[in-house]
Amino acid sequence: MRRIGTLLMLAVLAPALGAQAPGDSGGAHSRKEWRDRFEKQREARIKEALGLTDDQATKLSATEKKFAAQRRSAFEEMRGVHEALRGQLRPGVAANSDSVRKLLDAEEHGEEALAQLRHDERHEMATYLSPVQLAQLHMMRDRMRRFGMRGRMGRGGMGGMRGGMGRDRDGRDGDGNGPPGHGPEPI
Image (tube, rainbow, N blue to C red; front, side, top):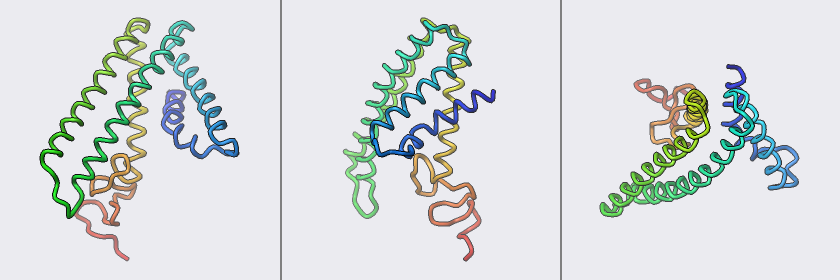
């Protein structure tokens, strides 16, 4: 269990640590080396935790890379939709209802596309992983996702969004207000 916890923490912290890699005078080169080392360590931990054969580990790596590229593309599209939606919903600016409806439809389609990608990836993995291994991998990924969300929630909400939904570790929102019903922080 301790190894899985370490794996989860490394997977979640990798992007942040990659941006802060010491001796970054090499720029992208040292970040790429760091990412490659991290990825090899992650793959080794998954192989050990799931008891994968070399063949299974190779296939899993290929599947993850294939679907990661597709997922990145889908997230990029959804990011654009969210930015456009935020632009429509700026305070003091009348939103165009037709544009908002189209953006909401695009957001829903993006979520459906991501769900389809998860389904397709799991279906492909089921051709070489046992049901137990597949379930273990799913649980590991779920823990990583929850761990990552908990970290983002502590920094101000859903992916950094404020608007009263996100609170810091002390329960304060971005305006210094305490937990609901407690009013502003005393000076």
